[in-house]
Amino acid sequence: MISVDDALDQIFTRIPTPLPETIPLARAHRRVLTKPLVARHTQPPFDASAMDGYAVRTADVVPGQPLFLAGTSQAGARFTGMMQRGECVRIFTGAPLPIGADAVIMQEQATARGNQVSFDQVPRLGQSIRRKGFDFVADKELIPAGVPLTPAMLNLVASANYGELTVAKRPKLAILATGDELVAPGSEIGPDQIVASNSYGLIPLLAPYSEKIIDLGIVPDDKKQLENAILGAFDYGVEVLITSGGASVGERDYVQDVLRDLGVNLDFWKVLMRPGKPLMFGTRGKTLVFGLPGNPISAFVTATVLVRPALRLMTGHTDPFWPSLAVPLASDLPANAERRHYVRAKLNRSEIGFLEALPIAETDSNHSTSLAEADALIIQPENSPLLPAGEMVEVIPLNMLS
Ligand code: AMP
Ligand code: MG
Image (cartoon, rainbow, N blue to C red):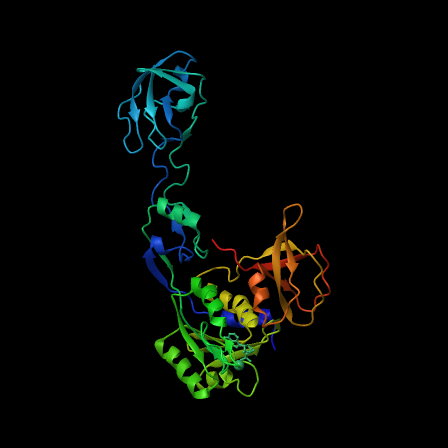
């Protein structure tokens, strides 16, 4: 058995370098740039008004004394003349500042009578002007490589005039569930049958890091059928294969044998974590193979802790780990043995409004209700003593997305 950290290190050494591909901007949410994105132009490209109002020369403004209205500067259609002494120009938000103006007075502080406009106050030099390049200048690095693109970043990318982006390619995945007792959701359930649920959590969990996930469905505990299904995935050219079930040492747990028979080099098959001890990892050429445990919580947690980091690296993320939080415990967390424990927890607000982690007492690896209730997994280190309420712990948020 190896520690979680050693397991991750071994997995990480097997990750192929991501290849670039060019995609439309509209499909780039959560994708990762392979090179930093550099501004192609200066933004704003000209000094612009930040208000609807009047462009003035500050030296000309005397409260109550009207200026002559010389014209209009609109967004998309500037005032082409030169603003003379004693003049002002009607201006709208985003419109270029006329030559000769050095401030904008908002319309609420102006009184217009015909072409005579007077103002309540003398403006500050540069008031309500957005200077050319105040957002960014040409050649500035706007977004680094290696981070997932957020909606706000995509806004910036668009404003920097990119219609396409070069991002890391994502792998093709195949996923299968194995077990004689398993039936698909929505079926008639026979007397000794169990509904196969694992793939339905794993697929959306891993989808952001996949080009495509092929669901191979349920395969019985039968060597030949398992071989056929897995070989089919390899032949199709998947870059990651994920199985759940049949991974421990029971008589009908064939996954390990089948993987070896098909030429998979297994790096390890047990990890010191809870839930999730039986977990196989290996490679066949460039294909990564994860044999996850069958218990639903074990499958989900091992995928979160070991598969997702691998996929993040494969897809160009510099940081393999989903951002974690440090929060105080809302109640005591019992002591732990030598396996690192990923404890289901609610993230609640304390009386003073801060997040805190309330451990869920249920720790069985087949109890799906408690995982569905959980907002986070507390990472309880190996051989931890009882951690008292108030102690800071690291948690992996489960449902925070942007
Ligand atoms: P196994 O790893 O095959 O020994 O399975 C461990 C437990 O997980 C057994 O109770 C199985 O019925 C259950 N199990 C295995 N695969 C799935 C699945 N895809 N969905 C839900 N439960 C499963
Ligand atoms: Mg089984």
